[in-house]
Length: 528
Image (tube, rainbow, N blue to C red; front, side, top):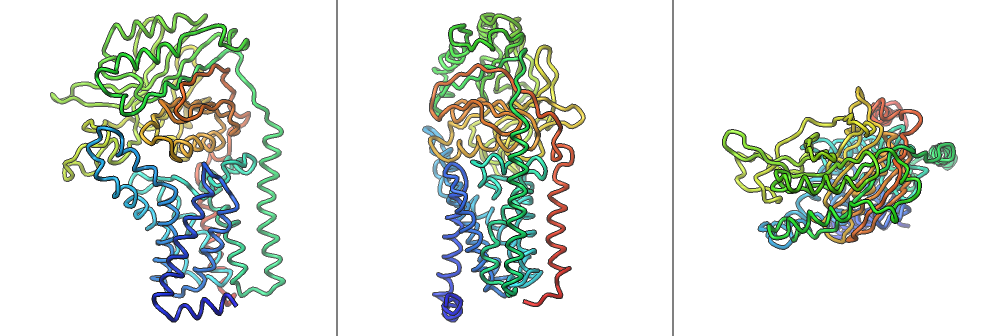
């Protein structure tokens, strides 16, 4: 009866537009609520299966393109509306761009979904088994493309709908987040495919059982991996994570710079009464400050360095500070800025060890700036790029790789394989986005990166969510939004064995994509 209704509605242009494209938009909107912070994972099944049912009635690539476009638009507008908050911070001269940012980025991202659906339609009819394989392979591949092209933006991958299911997340240690995304598309769209498929009932049942088996195997694998790998802490190394909770509108006012800096100092002082017993006996203490915690004038101030030195001297043994800093230097008679991570010790020496390399378009640099004469949202002329993922070996600190803000969202771009790190430190400032889904979604990336790399992740946010995630994605410590927060805890060890993904990157994911797209050709003898 539903099929007859759809066929009837297709005869009338207005009804067809509202039913198919409006329905696709609504289903995309529903799918967005499977993402953090709501994380209602059954909604991704309703969303993708409902969308597949609509898609199955499209016989032309052009119509499939627009159906995919409106689905993506509903998904991305709902999931990414918070991005515009960065433009509403008090004093920001680009507030007028807010409507463009709220609809512009989702529109661009929707083109990837649209192209994937059009390509799948070209390969085979969606009512056939071939068409289903093409749909899964093309849509998953488009997620990788949007995560890489034009600097990439792999936010709210479909696989992140499992953010609350740590057992299923373990699959990312094998296939990465893109691989888990492919599996999620497979699982979540199967019901829609079976509802419209031309397969015989017996074959539908066998197919459903096969898909359920892959889900069960991933769940069993993840559960066993977690049960066999408890969190093990280093007895010799303690970390002290600082979240100063400074509102973005107050962060860069000249009259507030010293007060903001002193707040970091006070939150960081060692107070034995607040420190757990196991932390007191650690040989090495690492204090972590968030992104741009140190302003240029303070980075260049001997008095500020002495304050840091005095703070570190309150610790019983080897203490170092790893801090975000906005650094400047003169180059060709012009000031150049870097968004950096610096290391300081009790001698007051400041060592710039890492400069952010994956910069935010229009936030930290302007693409084609010679032709677009505007300033980035950061209100500086833009940042110079660093050298990319690096690992560092500093006295009394286990080998680590730093990531600044945006860089944590890119699977497979965390550390150097030749100089393998033993933990990741990510610093950020999510005050730009206020009390929204953005900071909560940002924290979830730390969980997935930890599982992919088999490395613990230490996260310090100016405000947002700071915390500690072990090498298996367990959240051991976690702040809340808009909270002055500190924690003292021993640093966990990395996973006992290096993960498959950290060795092979996305090769297994590409193999799965190739398999599904190839199956759309291998099974071409099957008629819809």
